[in-house]
Length: 113
Image 1 (tube, rainbow, N blue to C red):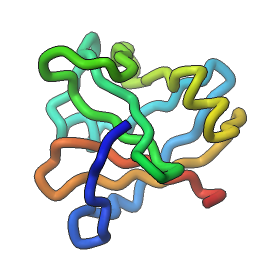
Image 2: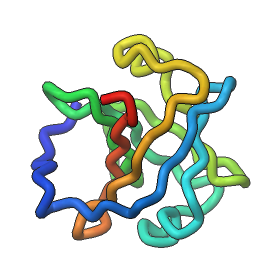
Image 3: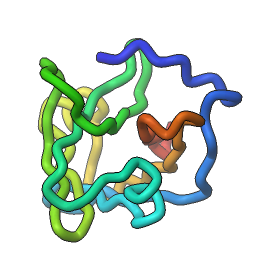
Image 4: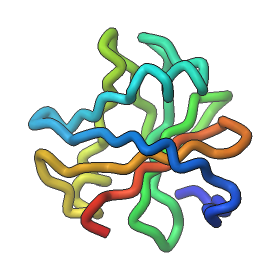
């Protein structure tokens, strides 16, 4: 889990969203991938923020014990099963996308929260 200051002044509301599909994947919009310099084949971590119901996607740098996923050719990322269960996520779940001011991570906030 990450300890991240997610106060609104540290995040940019992109006005974009993504939807969880039946394969437990979300597709990140091209503008978001470009902001973080993410391309197909890149490894990212998918984590839960401590004491939160929010997901963080961050480009993998170095070693980690977090969930490592690979970005597909279409820009999709699989959400790990344990996070799906913890957050009670279902197919067609909508996530609002927030970008950190320093463009180091993406925050996904479920629309149901």
